[in-house]
Length: 214
Image (cartoon, rainbow, N blue to C red):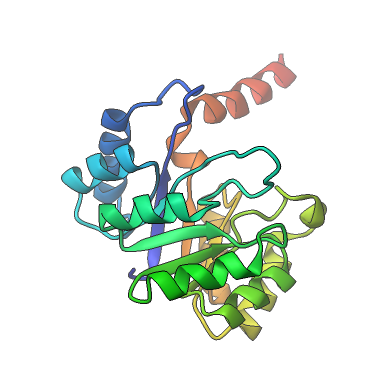
């Protein structure tokens, strides 16, 4: 993965743009706009995106299991499926909710595969760095109980200072200025999703602002 902008092209089943075809076209637009990589959810979307663009992909599978708090590539079944796609990097939820033995097992089973840790706190990021993740991502700051009211730039700064592996800024970097600030701070790359590829949310930002002005 080169340094620069990574665009997250994802749409869940309940979202208007849920379609591998559409996500493939989103990836084309992102690369035309300058993205150096794509983050994608599901085998179907990854396979379609790989047909359309030739940049590295961070692959995930979002899957909910009863009794399991982790939902981003949470079990070996999802890891196995992603490995079969040939995706360059697999992102795995590495928050405190995820058992360390599972995180160690993925490296043992796939020693040649690159893995990214999706974390929500400094402590989780340091654990992921110690375990050998190739990239540390701030993906889940604000999305877990333990990361409520944490400032993403504060965690990003500390991770950059203390981690041996590259740190990727991800999670609510919603403006060009915030993305640039992350890189200036020393982030290896920055992932932007919602502000580029989720038009229903972008529309709501504008609609709410307009409604307040009426």
